[in-house]
Length: 85
Image (tube, rainbow, N blue to C red; front, side, top):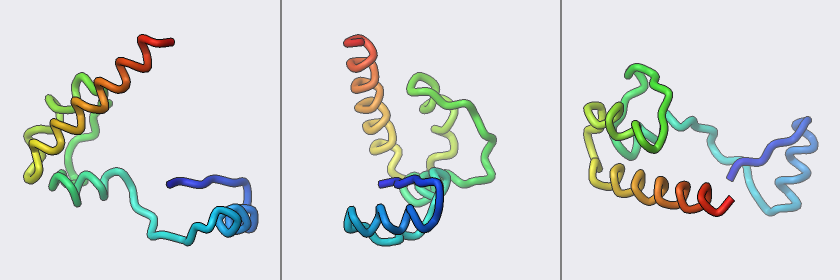
């Protein structure tokens, strides 16, 4: 979960109210590396649900099926929500 605020003091107050603790900060790149083996030294592409598999598949070194399954689920959910608007 990501919590944002204007000041550090306000952030700490909100986190305390919500019962959250400081967790290590990491980026999407860190998640890509941990889950799919995609290193940070790859080219940076403007990714969409449509082109993510095409651009990233050659950089995926583990859990490729999981990546593609997740991408399909997210795409389906996104398309469903965008059609309902």
